[in-house]
Length: 301
Image (cartoon, rainbow, N blue to C red):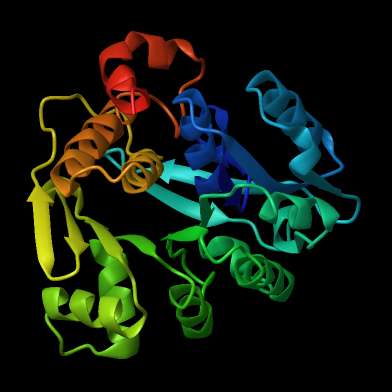
């Protein structure tokens, strides 16, 4: 079972809104690819929250894991797209997912056969969120691995959050812009490859996934580097959620001990297919049926 902890919200585009949040997007893909998945989040006791609960039930999520907040509203992000379909985010502060609490339900999930915990940075921007997430990670089974999909959003992270998260990380996913931000925190003079090796050694990280947009992506394992070019044959509608789709395959490949080159190939293909759709996740399960060749390659593991 993969345990996903983090935000769920509405991405509000100029002409429509779509359920989102990196942890939800990640969990949505995993469930539709046949992976046992549980999702811990918190929503407001409001119209948006009720709509989210209804959609999660339709998608087959176990809604007992969803906390409901009577004081804080459901999360929302205002999204603008530039001429290339690249999103700009305005993440509203002080919302329900900032107040996830550690409860007996979480304790029960940690005692199950949890193979991997997925988390990011945004859920830790509040004192409550940071405390809860770090408690979850510290009380996990010693055999449970952690995937930190760093997702650095402006004014939503600190160096302390990143350091404490690195201490719990087995697999780190980040993009080239995030790598530069972290380098500025630790050692601005280091070249990227040397800095990645530094992170792996200092924090005992098994694998680092670096996505580089139009320049493809790389995987770093011990002292080895594997890279792949992007898929340039597909028409991009927008890039919202591409990284979350990539992270889903990264998790599956890591748990199933795929060769790094296979992880790169399948993750790149899956992320590029997501870019052909509006928003971060498909509007229906038919998406996975239409792409059945790729889906079968993933779930046959």
